[in-house]
Image (tube, rainbow, N blue to C red; front, side):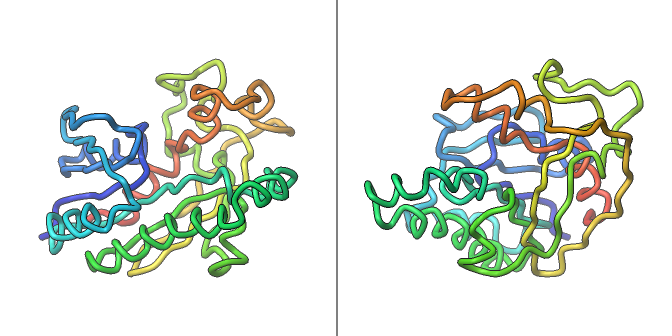
Length: 227
């Protein structure tokens, strides 16, 4: 039986956590990871998606072993929320969105090579125009019911509401037999999430908090797709 979970463009470990807690070995690949490190059942590995040799090695390492591939490609150059900056970015680099889409396609192609179900996450973005419409659109609070009633975010409780009780339109592009999880909504106050309202600018911390993977849907995905 396949026993490995592959997470691409993933630093936080939140998407990996439900699988790791259940005993799966989870490999989190990201360019920002400086060196291999192991935390329980989660192995964090440096990975440059633009290097074909690294992608080949990744596929060869995990072929026949992957239960699922979860990918979180950078959204900076694709999210429609940043469309006001597209003109300036295009002036500096006419291929900026082509390059951003390549990271999406690489995740898709790796999943197909591994023969595993996959989900690629991004906010409402240009992926819909360049590739295809998403298979699934949700807000984090729609899966907050998978978290305990006394939940608090383990790292950023002052920015990310307990039980993911905030709205943020998020999309999944899926394939390979991925099972869409059932929603379990929690009440949510109107308005933007705290990480959107409180945070601006381009700092590493700001980007990390704004792009943090919701933990509720991570658990929902595990329960729907475990083997």
